Every structure is written in structure tokens, then in C-alpha cells.
Image 1 (cartoon, rainbow, N blue to C red):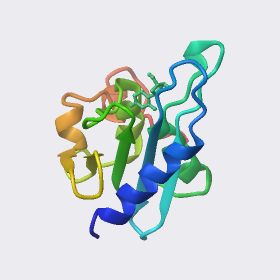
Image 2: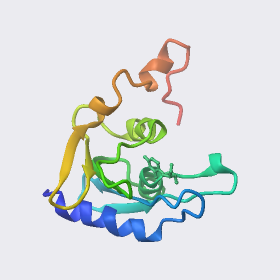
Image 3: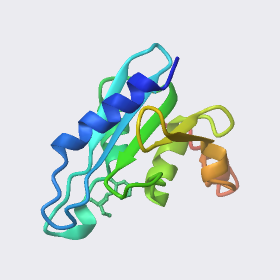
Length: 141
Ligand code: THU
């Protein structure tokens, strides 16, 4: 798929950002393997640590609708440059997305973007494999 539509959805999602504290809007959109797009914005909270990033909003919306297989995510922020997803969002993506093939599109616009694999963004990821040595298969649920 071409990235333009995914980027456009990420940019549009920024409009719903709830950012009374940082005034820094972020939008994201994730593409499922079956071609659906789920978008999300950042949602802040007076208790700052309760803030949810745009990327996680998009992933959680998709997973809560029964989607677990993804191809790519586009992200766009108010920073005026390629916005790198935070570490927590990278970890959440790694739960569902293949490190070698899942693409993260850091987009300034539909014409100006940078594409990275999730593995490039999160080398040495902690995963369900990492849990095995501790005596749990990680496959219970
Ligand atoms: N933020 C995101 O939505 N995604 C990121 O990957 C980085 C940070 C949000 C969280 C908070 O609302 C604001 O940007 C400033 O950190």
C-alpha cells in the first residue's frame, strides 16, 4: 500500500488530540494486514503519567476491535520534524508487530516521511521469548 492514506489519517487524528498540558498534538494511524486503518491521538491527564500516546491509542483501538495483525503505523506530531515514537509505544507495538517487517512511518507530511522497521527502533526488544527463561511460557492468554 502506498503510505499517503495512512499518513493522512495520522495527520487527521491529531485534530482530536486532548493536550491541555503540553499543547503538543500527536496523531497516529495503524494499518492491519487486512487493510483496515485505526487512528488515534494523544490523550493527556492531570495526573501526567496517565497520559496515553497517539500510537498506543491507535493500537489499543485496533486490538479492542479484535485486530492483532499489523503492517505499518504512521505518526505525525506538532514538532515540525520526524516524530520518534516513545519507548513505551515501541514496546506496545512489539507485542503485536513483527520487528523485521512492521514499518513505522515518521511523517512530516504525505510527501515527506522516513520509514523504519520496528526492529530498528527497538533493538534487543523484551518479548514473550524473554519470559521463557523465567519459567512461564508467556502463552497462557
Ligand atoms: N506523545 C505521543 O503521543 N507519542 C509519542 O510517541 C511521544 C509523545 C505525546 C504524549 C504527550 O501528550 C505529549 O506527546 C508530550 O509528551
